[in-house]
Image 1 (cartoon, rainbow, N blue to C red):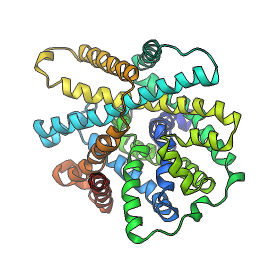
Image 2 (tube, helix red, strand yellow; image 1 turned 90 degrees about the vertical axis):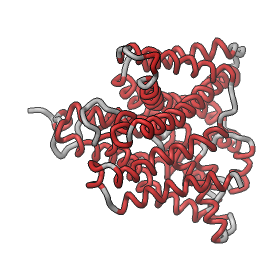
Image 3 (cartoon, rainbow, N blue to C red; image 1 turned 60 degrees about the vertical axis):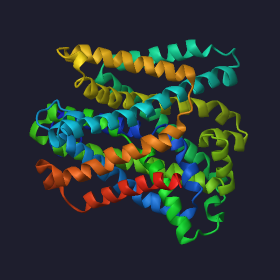
Length: 415
């Protein structure tokens, strides 16, 4: 008799459900979590409380909406870019595909730069070796990453799932490690005025969108369930999302809370000014040789697994664009896949070599585009796409409001 973990249906989680839940978790909880405590902590206690309260519904409902949008597509091999064409027409579909690609691609480039910088720091600061020329180091890292993704979706998913375990253990250990140093830092900040509270939340929400985002891997998860689970696919998708988001919210909120209980608002402002991750600041503040050696390793794991998850979404978006290009007319899907692979690899290497300042690009471009793709598009689809209307409910309005607030924060930044 087969174990419930190996059954394709039923009430128990299957082995593949668990792998996919861990993969969603691994894609979401990456480099973004290393900056979230700094942004949230600058707002004080009540913005943190609201963030903790919003974290699960905001993350779950938005990603469930995107998953449903992909799920209603006809056939078992149509990703979000194809479903956008089916649902909104070719022009709007192309715009959505282009925005989807730009948002995820820019994040992928940031990860390539961050990973190269982190590995370079490990070589010089931790191993005390001579610096490797950036061109060669970037090439070696790019080749390694592209070899991983070259072996296909299953290898990527299992690699992310494997990397989740040491990362979760490290983040949880750091959260516990800080407990003896809890000084109530979050309570020391003066109570904000109502206007300051609202402004703080407007700044926090886009960072939450980025930190909790795992939209690049949603299409792959949904399509895998449609292929393997048939009529039972939607139930598996919901279970995967619930498990993944419980893990995401539990780990992230505890880590953020532990950081905010340890550091004062002034310290977090200092961390922001120095453009340091919370791990880097933690190692400096505690003067801990252990953290000095462990922090870059944790950061490397976080960035690597997030890179793998975002690569899938980047390739998906680029293929959606290539399918419309006249110069690839008649090319097979395999040939276009190779072109996408080479183009992404070249761009990743170039970004790592030239080390551009792309953090502003994330704040000003990726954040609002992610809000459109992840929050506003699925909410609009509930009204505009007949197959989505059965999903109408309060969660649709909630997701739409969060998306508008995220866009509002971008408007605020330019004033």
